[in-house]
Length: 443
Image (cartoon, rainbow, N blue to C red; front, side):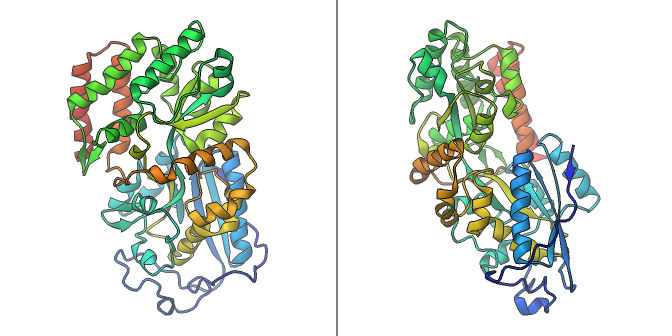
């Protein structure tokens, strides 16, 4: 259920605040640059007096606590700005946002991910931030170029990364020591990874499977395609064909035959994406695929020490990827205030220290360096070390996924499941997926 907090109390101004929000404090809007030249006719804030901004995100209690703390820090520096926050788990989050959008009452500041970024931009639900980036009122100069690009839709900056993450293999370090099986290593080929997982299953006498079945994992498929010079998308269409998809599914069929993966029923549990259902956490596999920013949460769910390494294939298949974005509602009455809050969340060192790596590596490279010494959680340290180790090897960022990406992800999971339980032949299932996915993207 959504958790709604009352507006934060104002805690006093910080004399070290580097600039004032002209629009928030009631000065003439055009004198501050305001919306001059803004292409989407967003509403402007011209009122004097207090400003209350509504903020909505998904996550757990820890994310809520840290986010509320950093928003209070913002109010300390800007006493006229307070926040009304709502948060909930990932399940049902976008359904709630869709209801709010239909009623025209989207919160001023929302957390979204790449599954919905393009759709929300094209439907003009979120505010175009391009001009604000151009005049540096929204200062993204300290972000990796690929991370900035991943928040652009059709050449326009529509959202700002709330953190950076990478797909990884999260593995049970203690179990592998007990089984005397080496840890998975960076740069393994996919065939080598399957052989490693088979070795784990054999060493455990079949009590633990080596790896989750990644056939329905779009992250893994995307990186597998990029490692071969392909991509998940080409514009508004799939970037691959039937034969490539068949090869992907056959890789995992070989893994199943070798008992490198668990049974279909267990795999379906993990396909939900819920951290508590990840098989490396429940002890049913030695390794699962996850986002690097999820490592601390996964670690809190198990007593065994977890490690992380990149997915199989070349590191250059990965890119500076936003774990999630901050986006402003196009109809906000306070666009300058919302922009400044995004700027604060992204580029302020104290804010970055409070947030840590809850949403992934800090988007700003300078903030990462500033906050580095304050991270004491071992799992966060391991996730940060993983990100730092591959930072110089990342490939170019693709465009964010097109509208329909969420449907494509769902179709991939369903297609992989039908093949696992032998409900559909591989070629027939792959052909049907291609047709249905392209139709979803064209809708």
